[in-house]
Every structure is written in structure tokens, then in C-alpha cells.
Image (cartoon, rainbow over all chains, first blue to last red; front, side, top):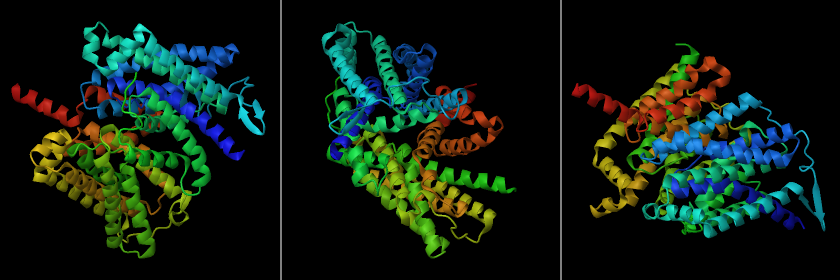
Length: 289
Length: 282
């Protein structure tokens, strides 16, 4: 039973990682930028979810507000920060991205306080279900279902709709796609909008899971999501999903077996290094949008 | 000099060594490393153990240098297998692995770190002068390498590995050399840091420090020794200079980082170059 409990923890963490990282992998696939400030978008989503939920009295409305606002922020980051830096080495936009993350994290601290903010009425965090001795929280179930729905929808969007196919075409052959009439600039905005909206959902779910949003909430995203997209093969959505679940499970079991030697982050990165030595291109070299 | 000024100058000297040595790996040789803090930390811990054990300054520095370098060459082997952004994230991993490992080791002091490290006997000013001498030596070495055949080979590997191979430059050997030299200097800086603080914890060598060092290299102008030195001094002084805004320090620091990159994406070196060109033309 104990092992099943760990698997539940691992899978729910893995799903959360997947939601955090997918926006990052989309940006990388298109622009080859390590978009560290994605962590700030994630934190913004978490803050908006809590604030709007408290103001409206409905958690669902909180998520809607976050999904509406964060894409604007994500697109603004592209327009104001990345677009003018695209012609430079990729480490240049990355350091600018780090600067933005530092700025945003401190802005959150100054505006909302060091202690962070919590949901006023939140019955979801404490609710748990018991399946034959295995305890699963309502938020964990919500995370797994949301992830499944989001990745399925993303798959359908990129394979069944005109816009989605144009998007994929731009990622793999920008010039060819442009000559077929796909506007590459619109694709970039779409990319940042979708990635940011997904980060916002992830942020809201993490806020629900902990019933807390503090200024440091985005920090873990800034480095672990990078590990995940690299392990997934940089730019591959499917690879990101697999890598997230693998890392989630390795962390869950790793803390039990080697927890005395290494902390949680170190376990994740040890796994990353070992797996990269075996497969230097990550799990999948195949790029899908 | 006041104690405050001495400590600031010492930290500047240490950061100059770190940034210039990272520039050898990432600037000259093009291998992006976001884990320089790990080698710095390894050197610091090695020096701390030596100081506690033997009390010999020379021995502590030597061991710090070797520890940094050995760890660096091991990571350098990783750079032969994974490339570009894969390597960048692998080095982030090395940093987290180092911190996570040290925190759990009782013999390294665990979360509490190592305290009561014996003094060097040189006094605060003596330590500062030693740090500055090593910083100057590092800068001189950086210029020497840059102008040598090795520097040429580093740049060739950094620009285009395939082209470097066609003119007979073995990219693997030079990548290992870049990692070995750069991380040896980081280990040395770690030893100097141990002498300076006499108290170390793992948190001093975290990922944030590594990112800051990379910011110094990028803002200075990747590959330019002078640019990186200026950026290292500037980025170390900046938080002190804006101390008066106290509560808004990180906000302003982050904002300035964004602003500087937006205004001078090629770094200070590129900016200075274009200014000189304009001046010559007029």
C-alpha cells in the first residue's frame, strides 16, 4: 500500500510538473530561448487565481481570471523582452529573463507580503478520498484530470485544426510555413498565450494544493521545469509529459531510498544527469508543437 | 579602510576570479555552464577541511584548486556527450546535486556548514591583498590564454566544432582543458572565500550565485576579459550602491539587469567598441 501511496504522490507531482513545463517547451521549440521568466508567469497565475477567487467567492472564476490575464502578460514578455533580443546569442535573452524573474518575485513580495496570501474559503485543499486504504486528495485528482484534459486538447488542437497545424509547421520549418501563408509572428503570440495560460492553470492548482501563494512559489519552476524540458528532448510536448511523470515518480521513490544522502532537488537532477548521459538528446528527438 | 570596505573589496576580488574563470569556459570555449557555484563551493569546502585539519594556507589553496579542477574535468566529460542547452541544464543539475549532497553530509557540517575555521594569520587586510593578487593573476592568465594558441583553439571550438575539427583542433581535449582551468580557478576562489569568511554553508554556493556569475559574463560581453571584470565589479557593487532603497533592492536589481541587457545586448565590451568606432569616425 505504501508503494501505491508513493506512486499517487509521484504521478500527481509529475502532472503538476508537466503543466508547469509545457509552456516552457513550447517557447523553446519555437524560439530556442530558455524562458526562465515562465516561472514569473506561473506565479502571476497563482496570485490572480487566489485574488479573483477571494473577490468573487468562486474558485472557478479565479481560474478563469488567471487564464484571461496571464496570456497578455506572456505576450508582453515576448514583445518587449525577447523580440528585440532574438538576433543575439541565446544566453542574452536568458539572462534578461532571469532579471525579469528576480524583479517579478520581489514585486510580488512587496505588493502581497512575505507571508503570501491564502484562499478565504477553500474546501478543496483539505478534502480527501480513501480508496481501499490509499488516501488521495481532491486537489491531486483535479491535477491529474486537468493535465489529462489539457494534453489531450493540445494534441487535438495541433493535429486537427488549421491553426494548430500551421503552428506545428512553423516550429519545424519556419520558412516553408511562411511561404504557405502562416504568419510566424502570430504563431509566436499564440505560442506565448497558450503556454502562459497553461502555466496559470498550474499556478492555480499549486495554490490550491498548498492553500498558499508566496513570493517564492515560482522559484522551483524556474529550474525544475528546465530540467524537465531538457529530459523530454527540448521542444517536444510528448517528451515533456513523459519526463515530468518520470521525474515525479523518481522524486517520490527517491526520497524514501536515498533521502538520507540527497535532498529532493538533488535526486531529480541526479536522475537528469544519469539519463542524459545515456540519452544526450533527451527522451525524444522528435519535435511536435 | 573600514572593515566594511575591506570586505566589499575582498568579495569583488573573489567575484572577479569567478567571473573571469567562467568566461574562459563559456566565453572563450562556448560551453555554457550554469553550475560554476558548485566548483566554487567544492573549493571552499576542501579548503575549510584542510584549514581545520592542518591550518596550512598554501596546502588549503592547493587542495581547493585541485578539488575544483577534478570536479570540473568530470563535468567536462559530460560536455563531450551533451551540447548547448542540454549542457547548460546539466550544469544546473551539477549545482543542485552539489548543494543537495553537502546539506545531507554530517562530515561537511550538513545544514549548519563548517564554522570556526582557523584564520590565515594575515589579518583582514592581508587576506584582501592576497585575494586581489590572485584576482590580478587570474586576469593576466585570461589575457595570456586569450592570445595564445589555446585561446584560438577555444574560440574555434566555441564558434563551430565541425570547422575546428577540419583544421585539426580536437574539440574534446580543448573543452576538457577549458573546464579544467576555469574550475581550478573557481576552486581557488572558494579557498580564498573560506579564508575571508571562516564560516561556510552550502547556501553560499547555490544556483542563484551561478546565474549571477553568468549575468556578469553576459553583461560584460561574453568572451571579453575586460568587459567581464568591469561587469563583475559593477554587479557586486550594485546591490551595495542601492542599499538606500533597502526594501526594493531586488526589484531594482532585477529591473536594471533587464534594462542593461535591453540597452546593451552585446554586453559592455560591444558597447565600448561601438563608442570607440564612433569617436574615431568623428
